[in-house]
Length: 160
Image 1 (spheres, rainbow, N blue to C red):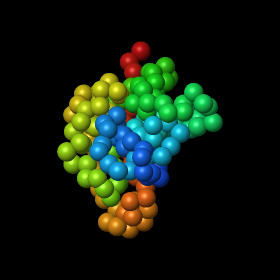
Image 2: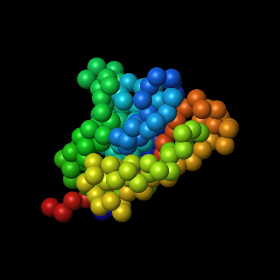
Image 3: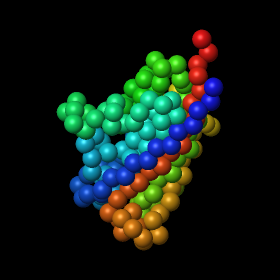
Image 4: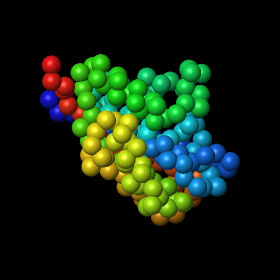
């Protein structure tokens, strides 16, 4: 059986915070503000794969009310998500994601981000795709106040 899920995440940007996307540290005067390391791309992928398997969302499995996740590595959270999927009889097949941020430009980082996601998900590199868009100077993303990510994931049941 094949299932599809969608995920999204949005974080405020703040001065003096690191900007991490799929575990890649991006040079930027502003980084995402959040309870964990605020990796919006990893969080969107987590929600997409959990949703595809009907297993809730990131807040259910990694609640910000739990101090255990304060400053947590989101790529490690993604690896734990794959374990959750496997214990429910699913495995990731592919993901497609887009990051919306006005600055910095992400073009030279997209391949590394996709490779990191593929590695964490345990899928072939060609089954992970990352795109980047600006906010065209509109809304909170376009004004440089926020970063937003969207992902769609496909999972399938594992053979018995």
